[in-house]
Length: 89
Image 1: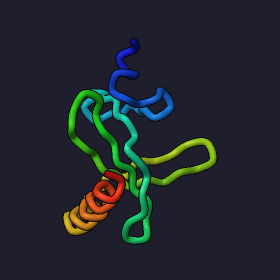
Image 2: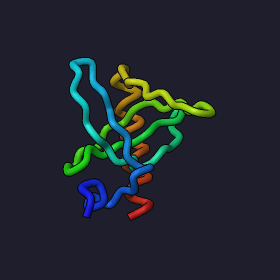
Image 3: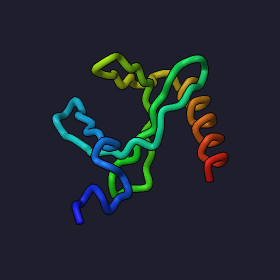
């Protein structure tokens, strides 16, 4: 069994984050959701229970992940994600 398969994600549902310090981390895509009139993406670093949330902008062939630097915005987005997670459980 491939390493990625045992975390329950299909290959197309995994993306690799590249951080400023040169490190990389593979994450499963939990979902893209709307909050505050924008799109956000929730990612799960493989092998952890952590969740990373970024702003998300999709183009025809590509996408951008946008750091959420405003603490109030981040708090509201996390609250919305938690509501959605409870609804799906």
